[in-house]
Length: 570
Image 1 (cartoon, rainbow, N blue to C red):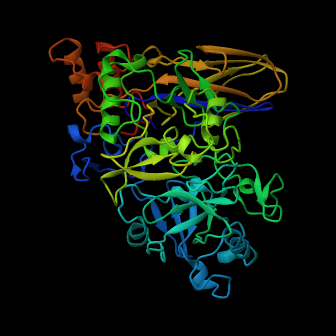
Image 2 (image 1 turned 60 degrees about the vertical axis):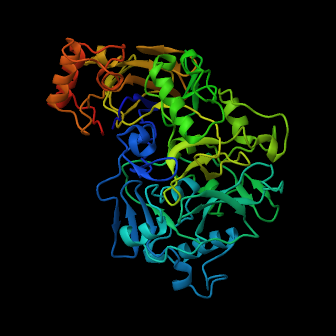
């Protein structure tokens, strides 16, 4: 599905002898639909005070109307992710009171893994494939709209025993990779990741000295989205107190490898040399997180700024058509969190491992020369557009304090963080691709597959569509620029291509759908009967050439009557 003003990029994985196309990972919405003033008062998302916030943009795949189904066998199915959760979110206390720590359900990380292994040995509910959720899976249970996420999970979703005390942290199967120190300059090598199912916080804690709760999960049928893998491929060896590549039987993230695999080339520096496309999510980020300031925005506070100034700066970038685009946004918490590689263990500098990994992948992020927490605190803290619902005068930020990827909240008015603009995204697939070899000429959709012999010569191009010109279809091969087609000769290994095309919008009226009335509005603007505003241009300029014309109105009409069906989600 497609969202507003998005550049759609579909990741196609070509495999020899199995040649197939696969969509980019689709990030879900955060759940937040409310906007807030700087002092935490709810405000209209359609108004000036709500502009640019998560609740106004609603970036990401929409949740199913009925997201969760409470099953009769003691499980809850999440139709958004396809995951099946144990309904009792503190099962240990009710089922296994003799298990260590089970009087409260609070256990160390090693005991959490051991408990899930026990459930599999016992074939709990008839299954032996339970696992401790990885950090991405556990984060998916957070609804950013809710001030009391645990109450929502219980009263609305249907879980039981979701812990609602002040201590609501749950263990993930993902350990803290790499070296470094926390805010007290203590070693964090023995940390594991947790999520607070009460307020939505994400952090890590010492796996031996800290206790947390356990909620097991297993894979079900396909959901609306497939969550990506975390990037972790190693496991923690408790006897050696160190990471290991031997993961069999650990039950840890590095063994389970749950989620959609990452593309071989995770990031592509685009031909403009100032933006980077994430080939996993198809989000387009500025290469320099601080972004070169266009002349029109020099008077707007930039760099480390308050939340309100961050939104104003993004708005200025759009007014100035920064780098030729007017759909930049402050990323929501899911988008900013998608940049984290939980498996990276770089040590130069020791505390800046996430930025070091991203810089090695093509970005140009600032890195302080020192190695202490204070040296890096400012470098690795970025605003998201998502407010913390329980304290709406704060907003979520990530990479705070230690640069490993902690997500915490900060006061919108008194705290300053960096701004990292993002645009575009995946959100859909409707293109059919022609694949040709010396012996094969077949059309393959993203859901299809074609088997070719090793050493084949393959030509890849778009199927001709009536609206190709408007959609500006092109193939982008990482490291080889953009073209309408590619020829691959004597292919003996996997190849990564990305199909790139401009995403239509068309919802000029802002009512959440595309109708003939929107086409009429576009036509009136095209023939100068109505003035063209920045807002209508952003929604009605279908080919993104800077103006609205009759062909734009025609495509909107074709969308409205169903002649073009790119499965748009508005």
